[in-house]
Image (cartoon, rainbow, N blue to C red; front, side, top):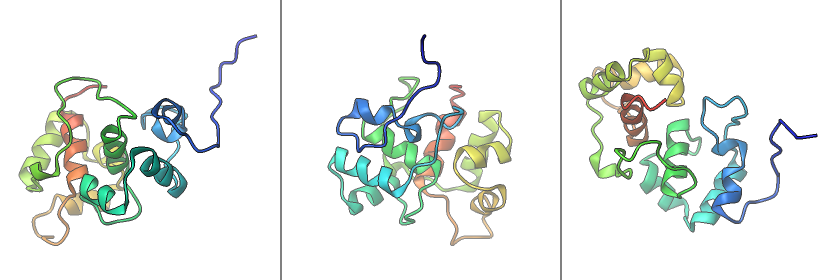
Length: 157
């Protein structure tokens, strides 16, 4: 009899291939996806040879609670997952553009609602809208949010 439900290990992965089998490495749209834990983050950092400062540089995010966008960015950078389309370039926080008009253009190009984009980027709608509001200058979208919206705008799904 063949097994239809994937089985995941709880041991710490030592290779990229092993890490790909973890529920936190699956796409958000996969029903078996599970949000990463601090243990998953530590395992990914160890596998990639990163320290805390490296993670901040990659995600441009000081918050220890990572959004899905930041997590996916780390998985891409570590080579755990690959972009679905070669048009996507490697993430580079030097390209950070938190301009609300640019972010709204990306949302429009994605064909998704603001709510759907917020969810895909790991935010609730209320907090996500604040990132798009120029009247909230201290709440600029992190590069990981921009990158997530750029990927969504490519309509890869």
